[in-house]
Image 1 (cartoon, rainbow, N blue to C red):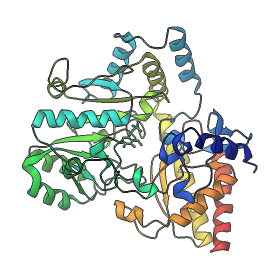
Image 2 (image 1 turned 45 degrees about the vertical axis):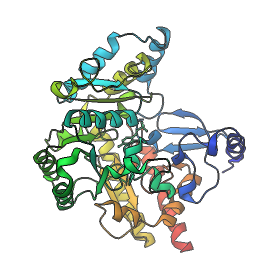
Image 3 (image 1 turned 30 degrees about the horizontal axis):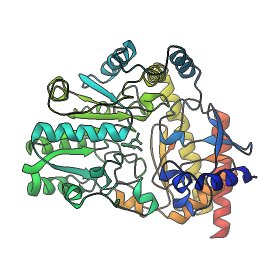
Length: 433
Ligand code: PMP
């Protein structure tokens, strides 16, 4: 596969864009370096790069593209939005319709605010929790990524850790000192942390199903319920970061899958249909603490922009039929079985965590329920798999902490071709080890 043009564009990029990329995870640092592939066109489940090579896409732009590229209804909505003028800076009917649609899907969202990214959504839920409780400390879970606001860059999973920097420079020590980190899927650790710091904790913040040290579900059906219970006993609020999980597994939230009710939600990714978006919300009482009704401030020039609203609605409309989730799950299951069979044949230790159409391949014998287990996944083997698949036309996120995302655009032919590429890659890896 000739990728010369990618190399040339990346060299050119490095002279003007810091590090040649606009988000660090796009560089190939976690998979042994070299130049990332520069893409030119996306269509359905496929990507074409600047050299004209074709790839089956499981990156899904790190999650938003649940319909793959250029879904016809999303494109139609976007074109209509362009025809009507891009940005208003006034209320519009589309933001109302979209908020109603989200509330119907997730009734806990009695009041919602649209922002521009998952980072902003999480950052603002934290401000709300602090504003409401009058407390400063936060508890988060080791390895979970919640965007790049200062407080959230403590022990932050797939972002910084995949490039070997567990915390970020420039985060004040005083900010980091307010963030307590405990392992996910370990209720006792949370109970212990609350026993020490409980009276100072504004919020416990969790990805209900983790997506940032690979896909990791709660180990027991009662875990999330217990997290909420012990947090509330300490007077802390509970924030579910559903930036990855909302509308990923069914038409609604991950909270609904476990029949639980956090105080606040942060949303993003899928709900924008591929356009920039974030949203946060919760009960009327809590949300009324936000300006213009309350003392917690949050604003945004681009917030609720018509293009994101209309693309988001079109994206969710196309998810309303449960069959689309059944199909993604079926493809996920077929991929899981094939990948595990190829790994066994090649003698490679592989653990695969899958929820619906989203899964992570770990190069470890152990069950992965916590960040430390994901960390133990062999980085060199991951890099070998990543590169073996890339040259065979299958694109993953370049990090062992990310998921493969099956979209509604993937076809049976894609799955067959992917499994052939996996089998060949694993055989090649076995020969070289
Ligand atoms: N929360 C979670 C769970 C995420 O996975 C991400 C992004 N990967 C974010 C927040 C931040 O979202 P954004 O990149 O849109 O700021």
